[in-house]
Structure formats: C-alpha cells, structure tokens
Image 1 (cartoon, rainbow, N blue to C red):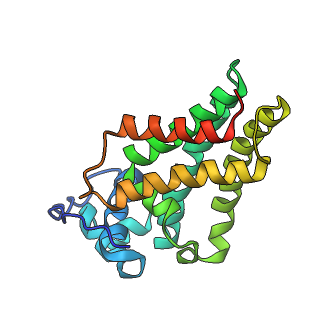
Image 2: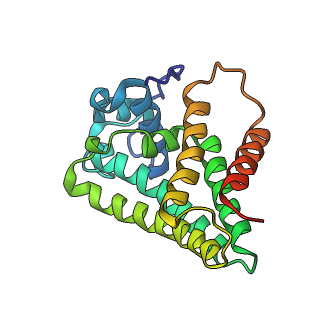
Length: 210
C-alpha cells in the first residue's frame, strides 16, 4: 500500500558550525522520506538534504538508515508500553483498563499516522535481523501487558472466549480500523471519536459478559 504525501520544500543547508542538530529533526525527516520513497528508496543523502545538513553531519547521529528506522519503531512502542503500564496500574476494574488501553492505542495511531504506519505496517524485514531484536522485545512486552489485563477479565469470569483469542481479536480489530483510517484518507470517515467509541462498544459487547 502506498501513502501519498506532499513533498515538503527542501530545508536550506544549515551553516557550518550552526550548533547541535537534534535527533528528533532527523527522525521526523526520515519518517517523511520512508513513507514517500519507501525504505529501499530512502537514502542517508536524501534524509540529510531534507534536514539541511551534510551526510557526514547526519552520520554523527546515526550509523545508517536501519538505525534511524529502528529508533522510530522503538520510540513508538516505548510510548505505547508506558501507556499500558500506567493504565494497568490504575485502581479501576479490568474491563475499563482494557478499554482504555485500546482507546489509547487507537488515538496514538491516529495522532501519529506516519510513526504508526512505519512501526506497525512496514515489513519487519526492512530492518536487519541484528537490529530488529530490541524492537521485537519491546513489542512483546507491550502486548503481554495488554494480554495480562485481559487475563484479569477472564479471572473475574467476564470473558466470553479464551485470553489469547480475545487479545488477538481486540488488537486486530483496532489495528485494522487505524490502518484503514490512515491508508484510505479519501474515504468519508466518521469522526475519530465516534469511530473509536462505536468500535469498542461493539467489541466489548461481543467479548465481555456484563
């Protein structure tokens, strides 16, 4: 699937000795280029030109484009893990915690479409195997925290199906809506708040016993 982005004007080359170049600026430029040109079409030179620095200056922050994409993915998954951890610790019932996790997940994707697409919709083969392990471990921790909260619902006798299948269905449905919302921007979508509410209401009516 190709996402069409309007190409922003190229940044003016930063003057030599201009000072510290924030990694965030490189990551933002790389996101645009990865989406616009594809991972294979992206190069360090293109990213450097987008930021307005030399390739040599960019190499002071990242060794290669693998490392850039990995940091984008790790940042997204770390943010979601922090959200799930915070929600899991709230003194509220388990069903409410699961719903809040899914709500937060969908809003993260809709608020950060470029980051979400690169993290959850790109092929994992685009990152070399040696650099993929850290992101995979973070993703597993994030998913296990989510599944653990679903297990709490099951312990209360309120889950209609098994924990594993419930986790897959709930996550898969939310991911599907976010992906379609990002990848098909020309569809006359309902407002994001309504999409999230109606989807979660429908999912929980099917999975949770009142």
